[in-house]
Image 1 (cartoon, rainbow, N blue to C red):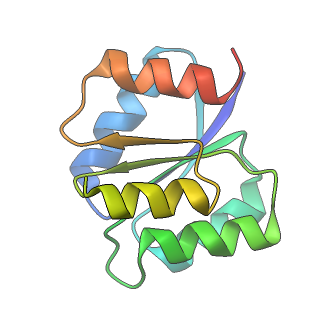
Image 2 (cartoon, rainbow, N blue to C red; image 1 turned 30 degrees about the vertical axis):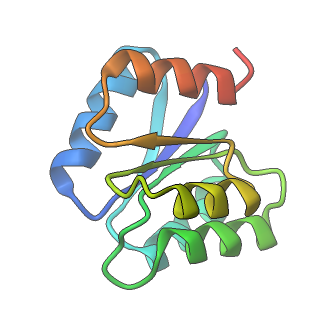
Length: 120
């Protein structure tokens, strides 16, 4: 079973993603409401994939992305954010995100991107 860490400042979004991914057979190893927790949980849980929001209360998702990639260069990260500006999307992909999902999203889109990112 593939293990996923969800990073989003919105409890509602974390719950929605958790339900979607759990129903699809993934194990949620942690939820982080901010960048600091995300960095700690990424190290502690060593998930197969991280879903990461760009807007976090203490940090930007891009900084968190860079931080995780510096520690764990092979970590698979998918950005899930309401911020859809091309410049941000391109930056995220440059920093090593595998994919970028813009909110609002469909369950099909999330599962398709997650499966692809995990090579399933």
